[in-house]
Amino acid sequence: MPDPKTRWSHLSNNTILHELQLESFEYFNQETNFKNGMVRDRSFRKSPASIACIGLALSAYPVAVERKFISRRTAVRRTLNTLRFFANSEQSKGARATGYNGFYYHFLSQLSGRRVWRCELSTIDTAILLAGVLVAASYFRRDTPDEREIREAADSLYLRTDWQWALNNGRTVSHGWKPRHGFIKYRWKGYNEALLLYILALGSPTYPLPQSTYKEWTAGFEWKRIFGRSHVYAGPLFIHQLPQVWLDLRGVQDDCMRKKRSDYFKNSCHATLIQQQYAVKNPGKFAHYGRHCWGITASDGPGNVTVWIDGIRRRFYDYLARGVPFGPDDGTISPWAAVASLPFAPGAVLPTIRNFDNLRLRERAPYGFEASFNPTFPVKGSPNGWTAQYHYGLNQGPVVLMIENYRSGLLWRLMRNCPYIRVGLRRAGFRGGWLNTAPIL
Image (cartoon, rainbow, N blue to C red; front, top):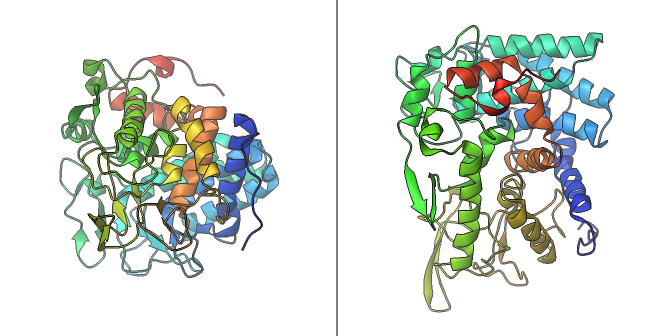
């Protein structure tokens, strides 16, 4: 068992955020094969790598340099090894390839980087990977052979992604493709994390999506008024966060948001505060829910079981996209999901971080807070009930990156300088704010 960690009760907010960033970044130090850049999906020795986790790692290395977690030399070496692997890995219809048509399989072998688990060629996870690739190109701007190679490799990887193929003759992008069965029937339509995907795809100089695909995506939006707040609805908190890890959407609007006199940043502010208000109201009467204990999103859970607790029949779930306020909700809280909302509602998040520390959710966790916990599900000897066995890179990355966006705006600034992002946003109909200004080089 690790040594008990220093409690945060008497530390400043800035010190707490710095320590939480450092602890969360340690995931990428410990769960990465630095020879090829493969990052484990979860903190389990036999776990395969996840391409989304790799994209988050590439995005986190500049933060680690700026915060002096690692040296620039180390970050350059890790980034180069990762980009070289993807540049040289097999792109074919082969069932054991790494990718095809510029896209990559969701899960790859930690050792070889080849496809595992008969998983899909994932369009959204490729988008997250490419976001990290473009962060690297924007950050490593020095005139050295290694940093020039990073920029050239990043450009090549982005430009070879055939977004038009991923339409599969439809109006919106397919979720993915498999060698034997072809395209998955599901498509990215309606408010979800694919906002990032569409901006990247619209900005491509080689295989750009038609602008009509973005309008088709927004056509599936559901506006709801919840607790007096009108916003584009999505139940799980990660949907409101993930695209804005990279996209600075403060004060820029597409046609949909202009009509509502809002923007996606404000929309996520509403979603965050709705989560907090829901926890205060606590209609399911779950343990620990309150003003400083919330964070409901896609996460592990106690398992698919039904248990009678204090005279109430409780249904619990395994891994599931939990949501607010319409559910599903079984009392599982994910601290990382609250932390990743820091830029949207610091007044709600900062006291919540302190409360999670008071609950000793860092005490046994190697990488910041426990990934998720359920105090309603009784576990003998655990005041916090059930706690997740593993950490996930898809959780750790947003903690590091959204804390940094709150502290310095680094990721937003880097991507504002990326010409492909600027073109993608404009082709999607975004106007105003920083988008009307020249990039900061």
